[in-house]
Image 1 (cartoon, rainbow over the protein chains, first blue to last red):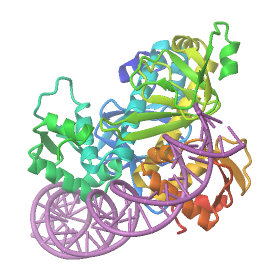
Image 2: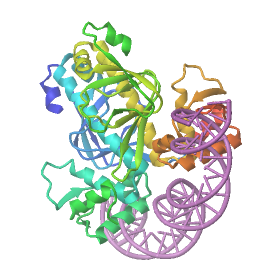
Image 3: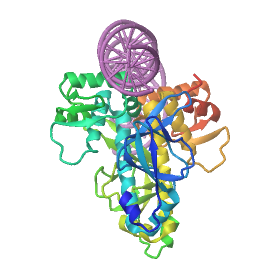
Image 4: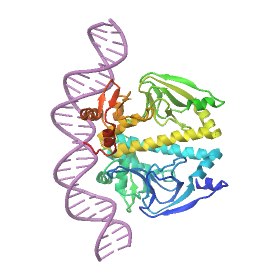
Length: 214
Length: 214
DNA sequence: CGGATTCTTGATCACACTCAAGGAGCGTGG
DNA sequence: CCACGCTCCTTGAGTGTGATCAAGAATCCG
């Protein structure tokens, strides 16, 4: 998006750096800007009154946080790692959308992608078993990689297992146990911390989609 | 939306009637139209390979199914009761959006509302207990009513308990048991079939938000 | 190096699911 | 209009799975 905004005459944006655990937004804040991830990872969350937390999404390079006409922030947003964001005044984005068909199609595209992901996420939360959810989560990470994925490859998991649990509607212990099971089965292997190697993409896919394998 | 579309010069829409259990869309179909509910209730669903079903949403009078630039249907859509829908060619809607700022704001408004609901739904699926999910669901129904809700009022529940369960990520039996419990507690009362009376809005709200009461 | 956080694993428990059976409600056709 | 069959609802009993509780190991970070 960055290039598209810059190309417009009224270009005016700033940069914001967040340290790990830095807060970008509180749930319900007035939303003055729309943010584009330049580096790092940010999570959006909702919290219940008694402290239970739900992670709605993880955002990495190129992802957008905030939508035109979202006057109040829908979720809180917190840095999972140190992160850099490009900040566009929301009014400016709204103007661009109204004036440039190309730009508004770009926004609609983003919305479409988000809708698709949220529905997938909802299916996982409502109807998938823990192993299936974790497998789906691991596979989703590959979408963030450049195309053409071989059977074996590495993915980065910058977030904690607690964050993954809060994203998948599980406990941290269950996530850990499922990952251990996948390791024992040879589906994945821990490399560095915050990185795992996928050893059998097909096994994970079978597990994610119906849990055919046990 | 209907009035706004008609006001435009290129107005051209048709009406579609669905019988109960009639299929409007199959997941992945080419989406040629955008639909506005005129009467009845429709549910959108996703199905896993082994038959597990997730209900993504219920749609009543005035709700929109399908979005501009959603080339393939994101979900299946099926009538829960006999239903009537207004059908707008998706191309026409896309044109209107590009040309009329007013119209595209209308669309963005719909999208914002959907985003808000989906996030709420995700929190329920991932972090709420069965009683809290059912209470949230019952309260959501009041949004469909004209404003100013008193402590006691009636809501229509045209869908089956199985549908509610598939919407809340529970089993049909659990939904039934929670509803029975609410009846015993005096929170609600069954009136006609497919209609219940809310007797204590505040008790339901307390249950929905944190489950403070047991 | 020391303290905090995160991860891992085990043991136990509770809650929602599964299985089951009976009843109520509804639509259809005789 | 009633009888029949189907779907949907209700409730109970028993089970299994993921949550909880707990403790130790590993990793991170100042």
